[in-house]
Length: 278
Ligand code: TA6
Image 1 (cartoon, rainbow, N blue to C red):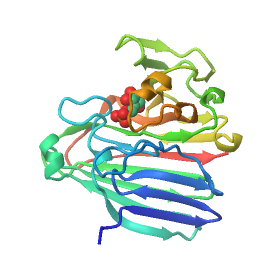
Image 2 (spheres, helix red, strand yellow):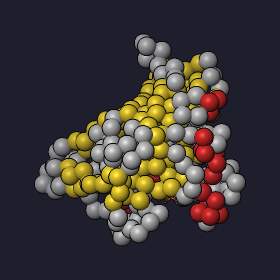
Image 3 (cartoon, rainbow, N blue to C red):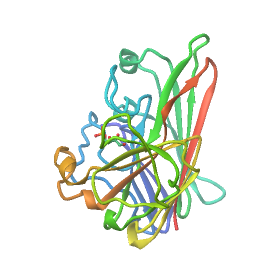
């Protein structure tokens, strides 16, 4: 019998979180039966390709990579269920996933590592806590880390994203490498958008998400925020993304990507994100 590939955290009141062990990808987060995350209708679940939507786990590389797949290997390998979903005294539900180096990862990136990914489902919140451990006795390694969250929205053109004013950003839609400063107090999206905002505040709010609600993002040790929508032309370039789906999603991604994390032997790095439906 095929091993379980999907883990469900069920908090009751139609509040659930579903994780595919392929990439430890959160593929659904329902609050009072309202889905908060976007997953493309064309998403591929072949255990090989990254799942187009939900919350892909980006490690050890963000973006193109000389040594391996874009956005690293963590989102395209099978993770372990370290601790099955358990209801805590608070009524919240917790599960823990883990990933360590393997023949496959070492064929791409020679460093031993241990990833621990703890998810806690609260009434209207999804907490993601990540630890990266360097078990080596003598070797330092560096990495990027990012949660590539696809939020489901009725119409991205009506969304506003706070907390970016004054931040420097790399605009990947223009000549590579140019840095700009965000002057708007709220960022809106009306065209192809692919920006890495640097040293952003700990909190962003996205307006007009599902049911016209707001989504609060709180992040710790994720100094950068990536904003992405492929818009019409780039949507057509992806075979796992419907041509007409781009109005219904926005990626607001908590990450440590503008500079690498340097992890000394025996040390650990921790980062976390809280998503809250307001
Ligand atoms: O996070 C934004 C981004 O880096 C975009 O440049 C775009 O490539 C997106 O990720 C999706 O990348 P993927 O490898 O999942 O197709």
